[in-house]
Length: 498
Ligand code: BES
Ligand code: MN
Ligand code: ZN
Image (cartoon, rainbow, N blue to C red; front, side, top):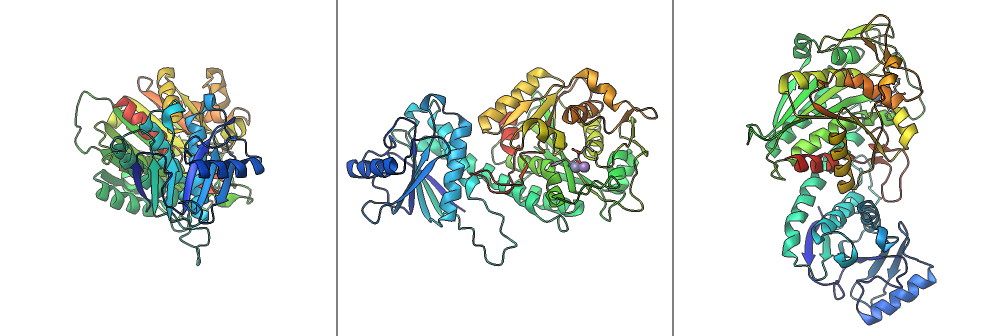
């Protein structure tokens, strides 16, 4: 675990294995390098390397014992006027990734918040959070983990800012990083191990440690409640379905504060069922429980962040397998709220389990706000690419809050419209609705399907995280694999509503 600390000053005299500085376009050396000999040495190296401070560019320099730190890493931040949280986050995650690959033990990062249009607290939070995010590796199954070692220490040079002001933000970074790691570990875990019941064991023990209430609803109870979506999807699997209900705080701190429910898609493996998927890349479908992992992680962070609002998390856990008992195209299922669904494709399973979760939440918890997170459609990835979440909802003001939270958290999200005229794409001849429409606008018809199961008076947002939950190829700063996407946005959102 990397120790986080903050110091006054620019780290000129800091001994370390690696010190990170940032540079904008148009600068000859980072503004945080004040020591004259280091500054001129760095400036000439940067010039030789043709480094112009562009975002995503970086230069690593070995000082050969002539300066306090053995290595210096300069990260470009692009145009100073345009510095966004996203750019800073990316640069810091790339730096953490690099530091880990280099096996640097002691590291430092010089922040110059004077010209960053960010408060020192926000800058420190993004810098340290991004750095730790970049350090993460999933290597528990490697006999010899060769992809680096996480630094033991990161010191933030805070310039003229009193380091005491940074203590609280750094503690929060620690809490958030811990749960995001858990989400990433769960998503990366192999699907033979992480089936629905295993997820309920993890949730139960983690919730107990964190002080979050957790109740596991097993198949007999789901049957009694009439959760036809959950039971239908899991029919072809050896592993029973479970719905996990997390609750913070166990007793509402204030009755007047709004109540929010988060629902996560938890398909521990999605073969497509009888509508079997193409084999190519199917292993990535172990990540089809990323929504549930993000919801679990979010709930676990709430006590540590001292959030006082009442928050519920519902993890809808199933495995989607083909089998003699599996549901077929043409079958009709009845969802918790009584609506019937004609199955067009057993591969459009996520919306079936979410339908049970959303309608159960509206009826029994009666929330003010309702958010679902789901790796729901390939169509959303076609629309927005692999790095961006599609946000839909029944209340534009609430969708706007979600997008603001995402911007603050440096997570990419973009709104897609729930065009009412597309509802006819999912009109069934034999049931109230069918679970798949035409190819075009597939992310939107999935959203319209879910809307059928949300009470109109509840402000609801649907986050299709199919792309950013899991990278099938790496993005500079982010290695291949699970990202924990959504957790930081949800935590920002909850704290904005509380
Ligand atoms: N889990 C998939 C969506 C997905 C695809 C997530 C790629 C991440 C990466 C989902 O259950 C699914 O199979 N959706 C279908 C829906 C279709 C049958 C209407 C899809 O997107 O093809
Ligand atoms: Mn599917
Ligand atoms: Zn799926």
